[in-house]
Length: 127
Image 1 (cartoon, rainbow, N blue to C red):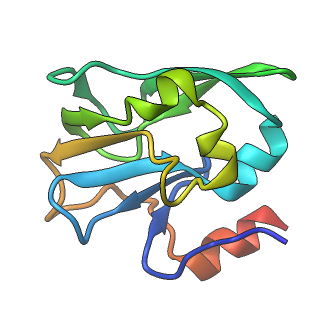
Image 2 (image 1 turned 135 degrees about the vertical axis):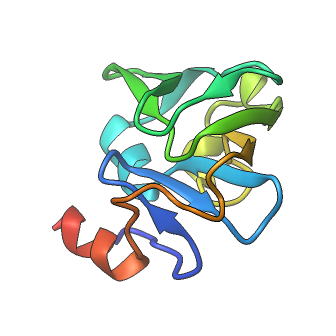
Image 3 (image 1 turned 45 degrees about the vertical axis):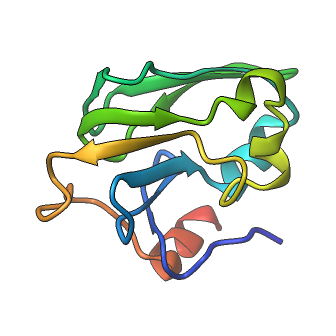
């Protein structure tokens, strides 16, 4: 069973964002981590980097594949989850909590990207 918290927004590229916080918190969905398998390395952007919604912001490596992580929001990276450097499996165990990827000072928080999905729409996409 895939966990899809109601308070988050999602993209069809299996990213989530929490717009209720400032900076905005970004991560990969439970569905994405299940499809990838155990993560062995995560290459995150650096603090101060600009990320653009719809473009690659990170790289996720598992025993199965290397995948691009597409940012769901544009802005400046305010923080990265440094725990993932030595414990990438946190993104598998707790993708919506300790496994968050990075935080963004969003340039579009008040005008979110078109195509963001609520939990119900994202759950339907997974099926």
